[in-house]
Length: 80
Image (tube, rainbow, N blue to C red):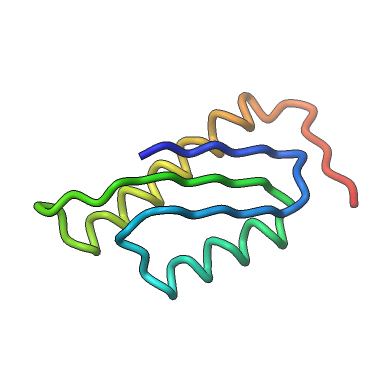
């Protein structure tokens, strides 16, 4: 699974994998569009992992990408 995250984005969200769960995709797209974050998720389905585990792994990877992008969070200011 590959996750690319841009903090100063326009709210574009591209999710591409075979094991898409519509409600999870909708929640992901809403969070990115309202947060003005650019997010690209590319994943391949594996037959031995169920949908729940796959979506949990996806959430974990997005969280890791966000934490890495934010860094130390010192002097972080966001204006709209």
